Length: 125
Image 1 (cartoon, rainbow, N blue to C red):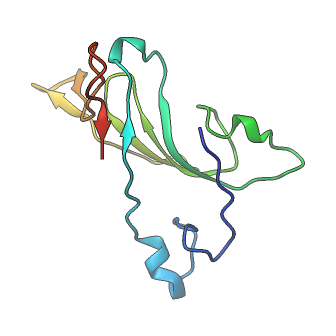
Image 2: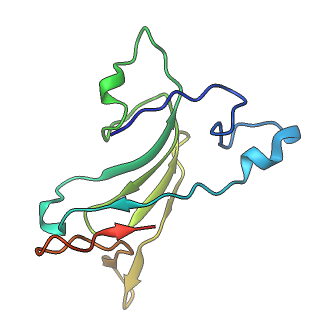
């Protein structure tokens, strides 16, 4: 993964914790492309983006992009092994992209495009 330091008040400082005078930072669009491997190789969730508060004395920066119960996480976007996306807040709320099949909550269709064995595909936006 890639970790980018984002200072408070800069253009990448987005999230739910801004005051009413910064409404535009509470509601925003983060747009990017990502490529996924073939689904058979994915055993755990993949964190696509995460906004964390970094406590330099207590946080190992090399673990910031790994799936973890990180208490400093403000929000994160993850791809689950079933292909669905989850947007999670640090307070515990979750918004999922999963679509239930025929009323069966155990079977869900994901929304991502996985890589193919010919090395093509897997690009998502």
